[in-house]
Image (cartoon, rainbow, N blue to C red; front, side, top):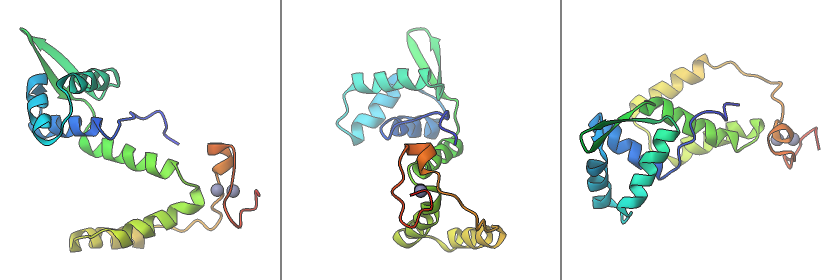
Amino acid sequence: MKKDDINISDSEIIVMKVIWSKGFATSREVIETITKATNWKPTTIKTMLTRLVEKNALSVEKQGNKNYYYPISSQNLTYESFFDDAVYKVCNKSVGDMIVYLLNSNELSSNDLNNIKIALENKNANDNLKCNCIEKFGVCNCKDCSKN
Ligand SMILES: [Zn+2]
Ligand SMILES: [Zn+2]
């Protein structure tokens, strides 16, 4: 499992979205954009910018008295690590249920559905899928699990 990937929190992703959409931004621009939509304090946003630099998700360049923030991680890679985090929280044997749930509980365009159909046609089954709860969580409470 890829648990060493950049771990960006739900609030930090909003800061990343602002910078992705602008290409780069000063802390003032980020604060102006986010405080329009949330009640976050400017100091909180500044702390998040610092943390995102420490996490290597952003780089910072000082010009005069302004800090310019640039994204290091792309939106696609960050989303993928979000999805990996979600999958990490469930057993190998529950990932299929998770995908079916997502499919049934979300609206999808015909373009989305086409991509899903193609992915499904090209996907090979693994009928020896093993529970990985013990190695991930130290316990297993899967029903019908041979490790029980
Ligand atoms: Zn399991
Ligand atoms: Zn198990």
